[in-house]
Length: 272
Ligand code: ADP
Ligand code: MG
Image (cartoon, rainbow, N blue to C red; front, side, top):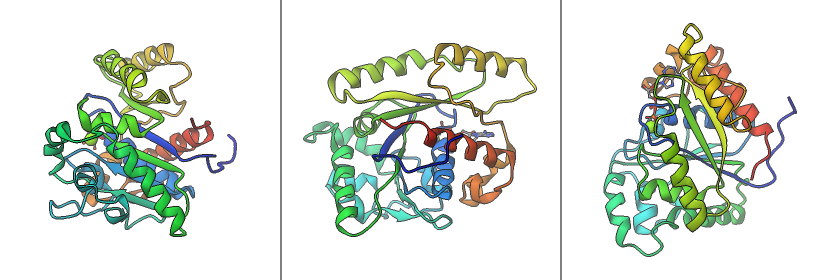
């Protein structure tokens, strides 16, 4: 594999799949941690009202904390809400609070309702440059399991979509709906958006089913699917209860190594 060099431009990647429990948050958090550990400047934007990515990265997201909600609804600058991840240098988090659950409705009546995250991130990049902070290499957006205005904001703010797919029965169900929605965004709101990456997660090597699902996904998306696969691992599922990524919680576990390898593969591919 090529040595990791910084991408030419900041890579804006939305992690999306409208199914819940497929590993979106786990993938966002562990890719972000792996990339930061490898020396990249990383921002995680948590737009899921559940705030699971904020929790897993050890960042406060009680409802009184300034959050992505204030950015989207009250025009608060991103610079005023981002918080450093306590365990990893170069990793910052824009936390989600439960208030975001209401944002889905509140956004409807706002001006430029689909563009608000994009504009906030553009302003934030300018802020960082003017304040001597290093340019971001990766911005990863963790989405709720729905295709509402929060997810639309993420798609409009991104150039890449990363879809985690669980290697289980029904894995491909709903995928065509997701792809149709992404095409709509491409047509009407963000022509630059592409599905750049698919990650197979929760792979159980002991079952034929996992291998079959993986084969099927690779046949459909030969270019997009990463070679690295994330195994089902207890360490991965334990880490969030210690407010950590598996990368810091148990760096030599198979789960951590798989995410480090997958993140290196992502970084070695050209950005958009
Ligand atoms: P989503 O964000 O898509 O809803 P999560 O990332 O929260 O999904 O994952 C759903 C559940 O599966 C969580 O409890 C998480 O800890 C667990 N999980 C995710 N990936 C793995 C894995 N590779 N091995 C074991 N458990 C996993
Ligand atoms: Mg999630």
